[in-house]
Amino acid sequence: MRYKTKYLIYLVVIFSFILIPSSVFADYGDTTLKKGMTHTDVIELQQKLKELNFFTENEFTNYFGAKTEEAVVKFQQSIGIPADGVAGQKTLASIDIKIKQRNLIPEGFTQLQTGDTNDLVKSIQEKLQQLKFYIGETTTNYDETTKAAVEKFQTANSLEATGIVDKATLIKLNTVSLAQTTSRGNSSPEPGNDIVTYSKAFLGKPYVWGASNGKSFDCSGFVLYIYKHFGVTLGHGADDQFATGKKVSKEDLKVGDAVFFTTYKKGASHVGIFIGDDKFIHASSSGGSVIITDLNTAYYKSRYIGARRYM
Image (tube, rainbow, N blue to C red; front, side):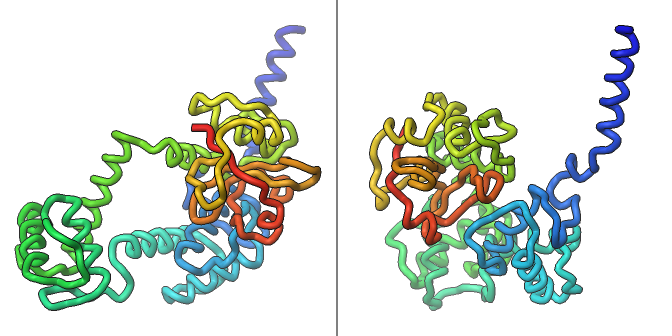
């Protein structure tokens, strides 16, 4: 009898893996996303389309609805591929390419040289200053000092020392600057940034009342779980969490601060984590999962009651 029981359990496990869709185990970009689907990759798709100014909503969910489809269509039209509103591998790869291009090369970029004047010149000077190639006050003027700094940078990075910032030079400058910033961030990390990075790993996890197990959360359970990872012990309840920590005004919010709202009952009854850019991440009962929402959304703006800092 014991043998038969073990055998049945074994069969159930095997069939479970057979019946689970392969998309559950797929990385972002491996699953075709289209209208009507519910998938954790939809959140990342919406965020990337938002970064490219195609998705206009301030709240991200794991549901591929009409507004997501509209954003995908607009993106596809902008790069001249079939605008079917389906985010297949080609569309997803194109979105990633556009984001990388945007981060490294500003749209409409033309090479810069002595005599040019614009804000990009100042940005280049700041990066060269960060890398110890430029010394002096940063301005919007591409002068001889800037040219000399560019030449030194080009020589140090095996580029032709023309003193002109072309696309190759700008890409290299942005790449090296970003690498150094990341390295500094890793050696002396800001706790708030680490909290935000860690919390985003749970986007799309389902909302379950009373849960705080890493697989599902309610609002305070999510905050409790995230802060526990960083050695901070909190109670499981928005009101309990609101009663501890350092009080922070809305004007002084920093990434990683807990933000509180009064929703279904008087006092603190909902909580999330501020991630910057007037947004917070939270386990939403209405959204059904861990999502990102704008603090200025009418519903939350009218119910905001304060913030606390625990780190």
